[in-house]
Image 1 (cartoon, rainbow, N blue to C red):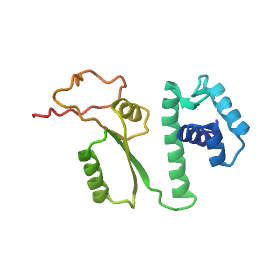
Image 2: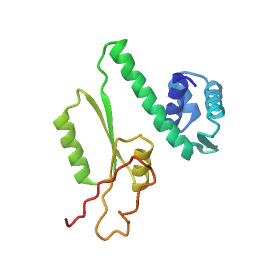
Image 3: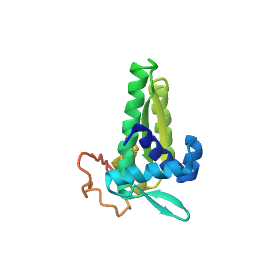
Length: 172
């Protein structure tokens, strides 16, 4: 498995299409398909499920991609620091539901910390995807708003060790 192959996997996941990823990467579609098959053979599981409508990450593939993104980000930081001597912005991604108060808080955070050192990403999505984004290390922070009338059980432990929840009761 090479760093280039990890970049290929990330491009396929981002585009949702081997053909589109191949165009973006300036390689042939068969070469990209072969690279995916080689990695899947090496890790001994399918990273992508294929259908007539496109390609999607499997559950294991989501986890794999989270680690692949981290490896590529760390390699980019290493190259920037020791090879090109250019400071690279650190990525900070927040996944949240679509609420005005979270967008406003995000804007204030960007203003406070500035954009010189960080690349800020706000990903507005649904509750399940927020949990997946944090679990798979796509997002550094997940914000979920649960109203007092919600039936969601905030006392239920998360399934992934090492992830922390911070819950505040709306009335307290």
